[in-house]
Length: 462
Ligand code: SF4
Ligand code: SF4
Image (cartoon, rainbow, N blue to C red; front, side, top):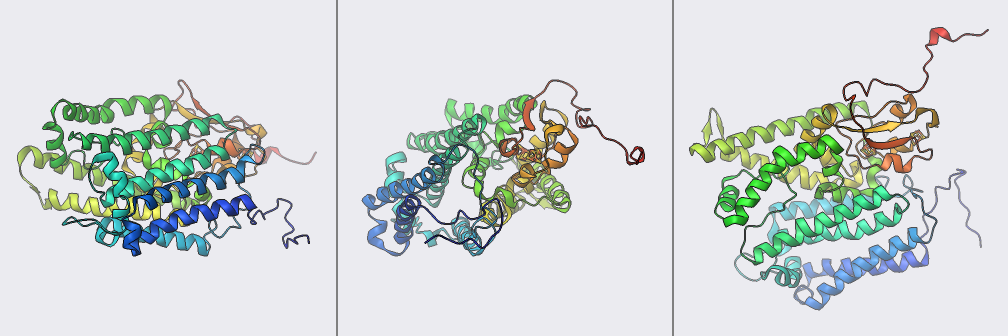
């Protein structure tokens, strides 16, 4: 019996029925996740290392198998069919459920880790205990809630990174930068700090720089690095060199994309696990105005907080005018470090798109954006004559940039918020957009328009 589709759209909005391969992969993946969830309720599951490894295996097989079945069996080329018809990607019941579950997980993680099974007094229980085998293997200690989080975060970037690569396999730029974020997350953010801890050395995510790493100048961190021998001193100088030299130089040549789309863990998660939600970003002028106030407001907050922290470290005085440096760092940690970057930044993926944090809150993105806007060679060039105004570029820009309006005018795109993900160029059916590192003309390049514009006064009937 043939299936009848009620829609009359020529673009077939209905790829909703899963193939047999996808159904099997979904079943395998969900079984792996259920084992993890079961560890919260069942002590025997939580203490079984066999079930832990089985859970990891099944979850990875599920995601990779599903992606393989969805993309590899079809010709190369981006498939975003049906994103506006799927409950998960169109703010339906599945999206709200996912948003609530992720948000609840973050709230437990930051403020109620005992609900996840953290027990500083004795043996862990629940899901934290479930991750003990991996933690013991890597750093010789039982897991903490942060280890659970780091592992899940890395798994998400790796598994969904494979999905992303299969989806965009025809586009070299997308494949390379995804391998890059997977590498930096796995080695720099996850494995290296754990091994260093095992060796009783000062540990640090070497790619996580101030102000994203807002506690870099906190007294306990400075003390740890200064008293951490040669390695600690190297990390201290590395962190400062990243802020003052490495980042400005790389941003000058390549724009903020070198960090936001190739290195950063927040960007890595947004680009991989968050890919199905990128079209949900708000493209309105109002959102852009809010974005500018918010992101620069957070940057000012981060600078004031850090200046006070350093002042206290040098002078020993914590009270400056009516502000206390200890309470202001606590407020920053609570509001920005936990609530904004974690709870809202990831929990709201299915509702507001994948770059809510990068776009509205990240002080690192704010600094890089200012430099990109006024002092960088990066731009997206447009071949306006080829644009058919389909709007794919604007739809899939996760930063809410109306790329099409630039393309229609043949105008270069130099925007502080652009993270250089290159998706606008990848989804353009006419090859209109190119990500380039140009040479000079930094100040004049946004004024140039390459299409012919005829004023209304010059148009008439002969
Ligand atoms: S303008 Fe293009 S490259 Fe920049 S953030 Fe948007 S989609 Fe990514
Ligand atoms: S995707 Fe390409 S053709 Fe479509 S509006 Fe954007 S630049 Fe124009």
